[in-house]
View 1: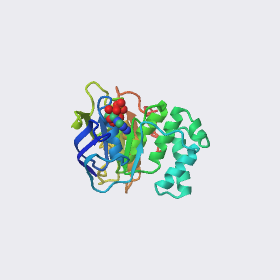
View 2 (view 1 turned 90 degrees about the vertical axis):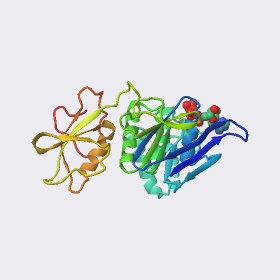
View 3 (view 1 turned 90 degrees about the horizontal axis):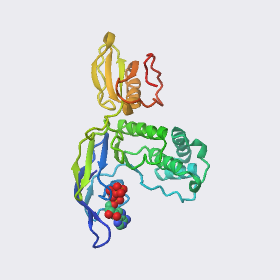
View 4 (view 1 turned 60 degrees about the vertical axis):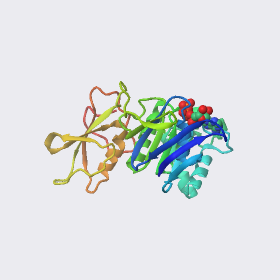
Length: 300
Ligand SMILES: Nc1ncnc2c1ncn2[C@@H]1O[C@H](COP(=O)(O)OP(=O)(O)OP(=O)(O)O)[C@@H](O)[C@H]1O
């Protein structure tokens, strides 16, 4: 999908918010959009998500299966949390039982399973945001558009969303996000753009002075004569490890997806050790990966 010469203004004679925007969205990419307040970030995301149309210009190519987390969640809808997720899952083409299973799984991942039967209107802002994020993730979209989706989430849920984003990208999806925190997924983004002067300009991937985020080292060993699979999540740096092992260094946000890819490779790779890179800030707890590293200095 590609935006060509896209412009958007509100009202017949309103000022242009965006103009002449050209943007291609590659597969398997994490794309950050930044910019000052009111410059048009949400406008751009709504166009990308397909819930708004350009005033001029075109969006070309086949629309990927798309899911979107808006800046404001419409909490007044007459559903329970689980009912809403199943309804959205059905809209995304899932069977009811499958949608219900995914709804339960995502609510559990975000620590909101206890609110499955709570009406949306009675949810706290943070729990409502977990539901908003879950509705987008359960669709396993090819294009995931996140407008300040981390806002209002507790620390554990923010980390979980980081991991879910990395998993989506590892699965080949494109994730486009806006977040007020310049450190959000720093070190993991593949491209960054700033909305400026009604257009898009390339932005540095990690702003000067911002942390590149915690990293982990993973010592792996493959069957003799096997080389590392191509296209691994997080594009890990490689160096020789101990006793014929390979030492991979990757942003911690990609570690779950990387471990999964290695363990499910054919033939599978053996994980010998996982350690945080000294000097980086704390590594988020790994989840959903059927391996526990055995080193005494393993990540928490
Ligand atoms: N539905 C709308 N009708 C009229 N004007 C709108 C509408 N949506 C956005 N705008 C205007 O378009 C401009 C860009 O808004 P937008 O929300 O896209 O910016 P933003 O960069 O996401 O802002 P913020 O950082 O504050 O979230 C603003 O001047 C805003 O008032």
